[in-house]
Length: 95
Image 1: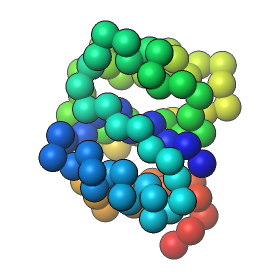
Image 2: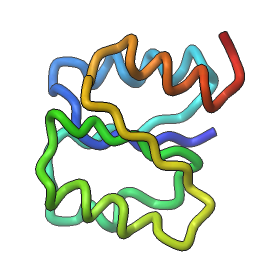
Image 3: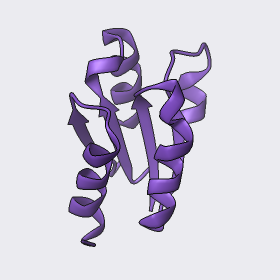
Image 4: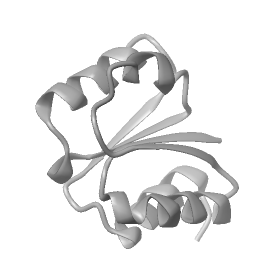
């Protein structure tokens, strides 16, 4: 399963990727708006939006790129490791 995480904290990028590996997911993490974010998102199976640490523009960009695809979108105000684990448990069916 491929996961794209938008938002979150810079110091947690490595931890987010490690958590995704534990759930057998490949992950891309974008904590800041980049000019080519549209091109880098791709076609993930799951899009995780950490809404507490991102701009509205960044959220709109990520959501617009996954419209029309089979991508599931999860929003979480918290950008903690436990919030990501909870989301991945729900979508991978693993506890």
